[in-house]
Length: 406
Image (cartoon, rainbow, N blue to C red; front, side, top):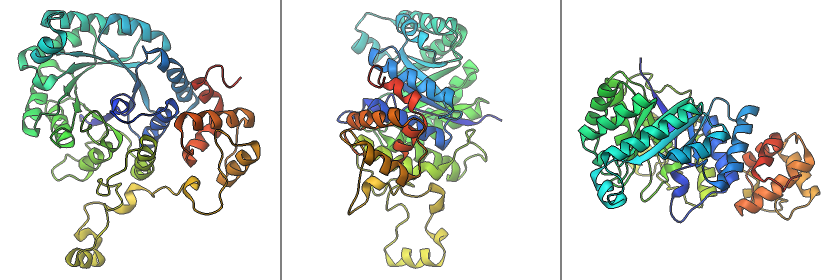
């Protein structure tokens, strides 16, 4: 039976969000949390960019060491053969290759440099280059797919499959799609191509999660697996992307959703820790009403609701509070007397913090240097999970900072 999988794009689309940012160590932590949640794949970034190379090498080393469990690491490239050939030697096994397909983009973005035939030629050459380099799976992104007419979108997807692509990503780039429309388009495209169509939905109309589910159900109706793009806390360009936790909750608890629709081994007990960490790391407050992970998600005050919830919480709650895991209580957030470790800390403070966390430090000298470097990169106190990752995988994380830890 076809199922739905998650391909999270926080480390690509999420970090492109205006007025925010994330260090390479922060991007590493996103992969750590996605692995803990049981998400299938993380789009980790842009391997053709020079400043991403040490980070990509560190992620692959961490994956090899078992830090990310079964999480698949994928790169994003323009559907340009040269970009793919530049990135391929790093050894990522999964890629998404992107090019615009709508007439609006042909006119307003490419401005005559590429027509429809040229778009397909560029895409096909990029897919073939990736497959020739030994890449296991390739997704081809139809940027602005929601404004691409059915005929050309189908032609584009069929050409991608013929070149060796495994999926086509339908990008609702400007967030204008609606659930009924996108569901029908996904079903038709998946049927015509015989391969999964991947959702990439923006939230400009507040429908990114609804559109993602509708698109995925179109895949299932066509007998194909579905892949949903998400971002933690719904971050992303402009009004954001489909929120990871909301999408999982909708698939688990939404009325009429097929039983066992999710194909990934999701563990939501990490949800609150991930959401709170992301809010802290990105410097973006988490709304109190954020589904599942906001502080008001299970709060009741009005008389009727409070009375009903006290009698049986299921009267006014769709899912159980404890399924989301605990809110973090990190030591750096404690009040009163406190010793931290970071950029300007000493060895005594480092040892005190690690002992307090009960962490077995693999290589004290290297881990101490990494604490200083990671704190300098983030500009904020390191969290308990960050410190534990440093203590456990110092050799692999040292690849983030070539020349600084030897």
